[in-house]
Amino acid sequence: MGKNFVGNHIRKLRFNHNEMTQQQLADMAGVTRQTIVALEKGNYSPSLELAFRIAYAFNLPLEEVFFYGGNTEED
Amino acid sequence: MTYQEKKSIVSLISTILIFTVYCLYKYPQYPEAALDSTETFHYWGSFVLVLTVVSIAAHIVISIVFNIVFRMTTGEKEPSFADELDKRIDLLAFRNSFAVFVIGFLLAMGSLVMDQPSKTMFIILIASGFLSDVTGSLSRLYHYRRGI
Image (cartoon, rainbow over all chains, first blue to last red; front, top):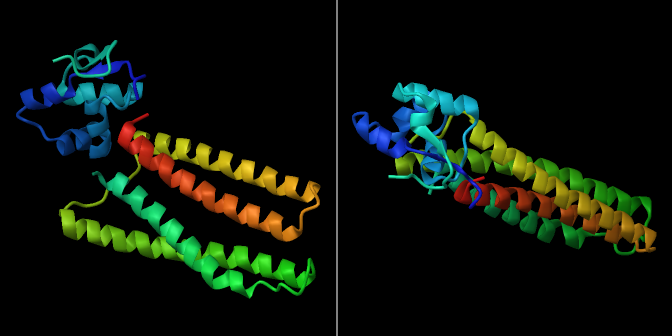
């Protein structure tokens, strides 16, 4: 919607983690696959709790998964 | 198209169909001869109550049929819970839906102030209920497609 300034590297990180599926990540983060799709498209800024859960699923610090200042994935 | 988007579209179509069919069935039974009598109030009361019951029952049946068809066609199970995105979209849809109903309610009260018959007031109230339902479904569809 053009006002989402929290970007993420989820798609790239999934690929780097043995091509993890959206459903697998959704199950690990406790959300539906639709939410992962919306996050990857840059259509949704997650809550802080969900952001931490996703970072935890990748075993990475939050700032390596999410960044501030864009509405699409940087890579 | 995702499960939630499909569900919003099915909900929208079923709302329009149920309301249209019900109105086509019930409206011809309006007691034209009895102006603003207890008979007309009884008619409008039963119109709203029966519409509510029919609408809830039809939505439950349509939802079950939709889930069965969704499983058969996609081979996926429907989401078993609502996560934070679903809850936020539900809140936005409810806000829009509520705003439409309040506008309709105020218009209905305005029609009484402007000495319109009670029939006008009931029609505006029922129409605003229908439009608020449609607005809710459209809001859900919009936010699932475009994000929040």
